[in-house]
Length: 450
Image (cartoon, rainbow, N blue to C red; front, side, top):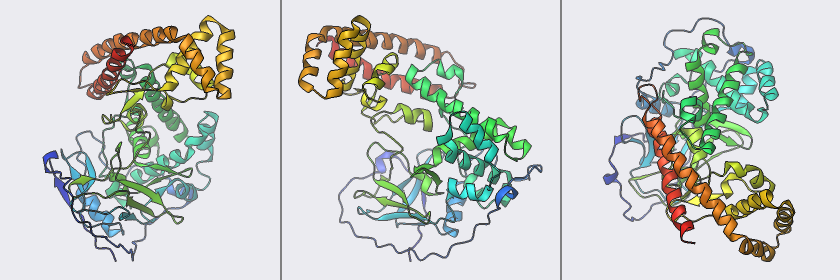
């Protein structure tokens, strides 16, 4: 069996250590005696009665009860490696770290399926009760969001049970405040570059569609009419779940691993729905264990979906939203078109899109020739196009960079004029804009001397 070790600490960065040490292999065998979770079935999971006393307090001043949640997780069979602990720098945000050396390949956490929430289990539990609601999402073009919607509804149902929910203790340990795009206002969008604003607004629109669809489920009226509850449940489902082969899963305790550009751990699920977290590298005592939430080379999608800025990200999308059509025609995505923060380097795909954009405006026949060259993969011919029309490409890029820098100053000035009491996400927005500005200044320096 695996000895459970649940600890908490408040640490400072100076306490971390990367000192090499002899690593001992930890063999973990999970002989679990799981505590049964009581699940309501089909439409019986929904209730139209008044909310019971003891529901999770969603006030922004409510404290997260992470300590009790860790005890709850252990009682339900969650197992973790010796030395793994939940750590916080400020008493508000917690993350997984280790106080002992952990060898690569070690299973650092196991969350049994009885504790895991999944979209497939929610569909079985609710039966056909969500049919009309899911049809609404399909008509809104959000068919791919249905697994997330099922988790969203599951969280609402469990919230509505108050302390009678088997997951109450976990729900009570979660953040109350989120900085995701769904939580932003139009005043926030007005202070962001178009790409970030578009992604954030998309999350807000997704939430609005979830909100509308929830009215077609036999849900407690007090819940479906309360935007605060709905938005909190949406943010929980969005930020705590992962996609696993088209399904969405939330593993309580397994959701405490932060994102990292460089990661130390990886989350997986077996065919029975059990969650395992494995160390992917040797992890030294005093180090965090981080997993990947998404593309580490571009922080803006994480900013919109998770509400944080990954300042260790090496690059960002070059913000050529006005060239989006050309980007797609050439078969590129936002993740291909990068400006690199520290060096000011520009990914080659950016030059391809910029040249194609210039040629389409000035000479469609030349643009078609360049397109055919791109599609054929003729690198020599592509290089000739770039050499011949380099000055036009450079001027277009300089125009874009200089204009974006002016706009960033304008957007940040506007954000600085907001009252933090009514616009608490201003610091995050300013940090995002500063990240982009620093990147663009380095790119500008390179372009000006080319």
